[in-house]
Image (cartoon, rainbow, N blue to C red; front, top):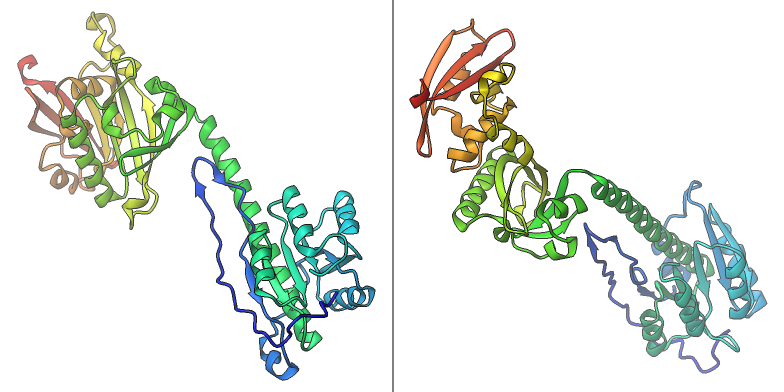
Length: 417
């Protein structure tokens, strides 16, 4: 309905386009506030609006639209024009009350409503819709031109505000474009929310400890990681990583090692010890990768495995002669790039006992890259190097296989030779 006292000469200022969305790895896509809101003034003449007419929807884009207006003639005209757009199906309603009844029976993709209607105007109707759904696109299509109506509509959750008037072809094409834009936005948000729900389920169900870390602080952890450390998930959220290390020196050294690895290879894998909430230490193998290698400030994903049992098994061997099938000396195998492809429990035990960097690479001699450079040649036999690890010195026996293109490092403490 047209307001008899409306000032059709007044320009409605274009409202800034604002869309606030809080999305975290823990909560996924939260239910957003009403989408991008916009105020659009209808075309004043056919000549000035022709260049602004957007393309119509393609055939694959289907929209079920609820059109609300108390004037039958305008309702019929609106339905006729909008249904000329490919994929749009219009259900008319001659009042806000009738529209609410339609919403009880049918699921719609969007609503276009007049403002000036008896009993319940467009703003009151919008508020009732928002009490039921915060995400259903709502466009106020009216001749009311006061700025206070625009502000009230947007503050109440309208996605767009379009003023009636001017060339009807351009006007309804613009309206169809706004409908498509609002519906596409909502569908994209829903798809993203579903993807995050699936991702959260996968991360939560993993038996491995998984965490999202930013600024060396836990932002999100799964139940498995929390259980490994003896905490509740909420207790770990916001906790600084230094709190779970045995001391500041270890924390600082491991942090430098991780940063160095990420800068060189884009990820880091190492073995370290974390302090359980109850005070004892657990041996862990951790894998860390940044969300964006070009911007480390976005944070990292951490995958953690508790290897305490493996380490304890190696430490608890009391009668080596009775277990001839076990490798009792540290053994590590690497490929031609230096990547570790195998290690035994004895290697972990030695690293935990004597190492200071939390990495099996402490067994690597300084000239290992040069040794690996000859991996494609004939088998080189035995190469021996002495490596210092904390208070212990190991003699490393290196054998290279040209056939399998790998190297095997066997370590024996010098006092045992």
